[in-house]
Image: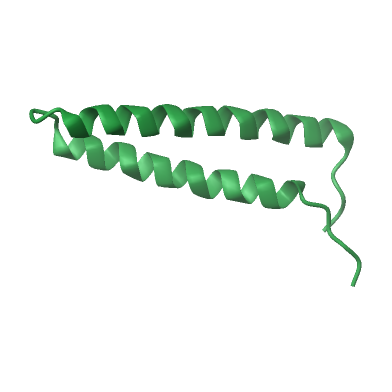
Amino acid sequence: MQPIGPSEQSRLIERLVALRVEHRDLDAAIARLQTDPQADELAVKRLKKRKLQLKDCIERLESALIPDEPA
């Protein structure tokens, strides 16, 4: 894999920050909905699924930002 340039690294970091914010916001929204006895369970499940997708994306970006070390 080729090393990424500074502009690409900057773009990935910005995307990573945005995804982390969305993940944190979803976490708060899920917590609020779970305290509401009239909350739509399907909506909660969808939010949890989106949160897991974000987590996977965050992990991929973090991995892409770690430079490869020579063997």
